[in-house]
Image 1 (cartoon, rainbow, N blue to C red):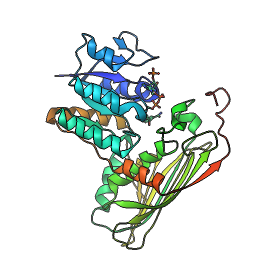
Image 2 (cartoon, protein in one colour):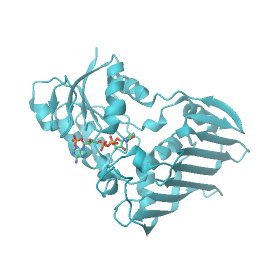
Image 3 (spheres, protein in one colour):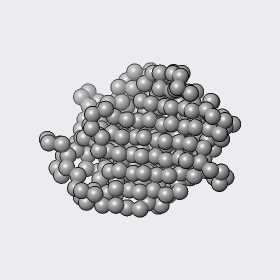
Image 4 (cartoon, rainbow, N blue to C red):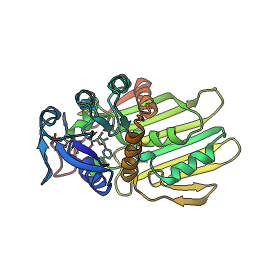
Length: 317
Ligand code: NAP
């Protein structure tokens, strides 16, 4: 049986990944799209989820690919209509909204799947296994990319609740929180906010262990990178193991030796997992990456930096 799914928020990620991966997966049938300004040829189309609910189109589940700031209200409407809900990352702008969404889905007895796409590859599965039972005392997260390339002209990323560079940074922390054997906590952070933005373009975070043991653990997220993009995580343990993950966590080295170059099929795996969750009627809603981002905001020393200007031809700034 295939699940009748509608995609909500037909922007970059919906078009690049959700629609193609749903089309490839026999367990799903794309029956409609909901978007105010975009549509897919040949599919029923609605401007709001309310219009979809009132229509005659039968829907089992929705994939919410809008910016996070509007997800809770849309998710509640979908859950009220009896739909199961998959949400893009970051799930919501605050932990409070995420907890409310989880509770609402429970109350409505529907599946809620908070996807963290950067968690889905074999290198991270292996890294998690190799770190099991060890004591981590070193970490460097180096996540530097060009905002012009990944969010061309997207004004919402600079608005409150738009996350700024925490939007890609949360991907790094979703990988870290997947593989670390114990949780880490934010000790201090610095956020660089362009004078025309409400969100950071650069972030530095230092972390601590929960047991007070000495550890040197830091993360840098920066959206001002040009040329080659850098998505790397290094981890060291007290027994001398040195792990390095490159290419967004998909290539794993241990003690300098290449262990695996994993296939990039994050969204294929997300939909395979969604089908399993729907079958089992189980939700999957890890709050850990969002909690760390919110804590980094809470502990931040803010610094105002120069006005951000999109590359020529992009956006309105
Ligand atoms: P996007 O291109 O701006 O697409 C989001 C779409 O949501 C817009 O096209 C818009 O379509 C709709 N939308 C915007 N504001 C809305 C509002 N206030 N109410 C209802 N609908 C609204 O953004 P995106 O890059 O696809 O990112 C969407 C989510 O996916 C974000 O959480 C992001 O972190 C995540 N993500 C993005 C990427 C990437 O490479 N960009 C990768 C992985 C995950 P309409 O105007 O037609 O309604």
